[in-house]
Image (cartoon, rainbow, N blue to C red):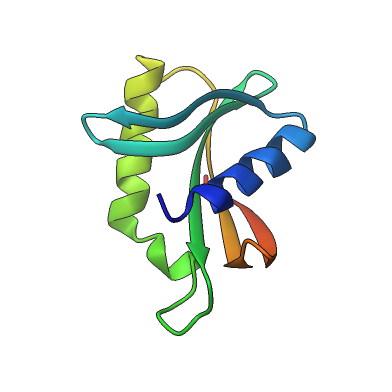
Length: 108
C-alpha cells in the first residue's frame, strides 16, 4: 500500500494527542475507515489523504461529498446505533516519507 507510511504517521500523531486506536483499515458495506479511534467518550472516524505535491490537487480536494458520506455511513454502521458521540476527522499528509507535514481537520 503506497500510502501506508502516511497512515502510520497520522496514527502516531493522533495517539500522541491521547486518541486510542480501535482499528485500522476497517471495511464496512459502505466503504473503509482508515483509522477508527476513540477520543475520550467520542468515537472518531479518520480519513487519511496523502499527496507528494499538489500537481494533481491537494489532499483536501480528495475529500468529496461522496467520500464524506461513505465515511459517515461506515462509522454509523460500526457503532450500530446513532446515539453515541461521533466525530469525523481527516489527517492530510503533504510530502514524502523523508519530508512531510500534517494537517488535522475536524470534518463534523
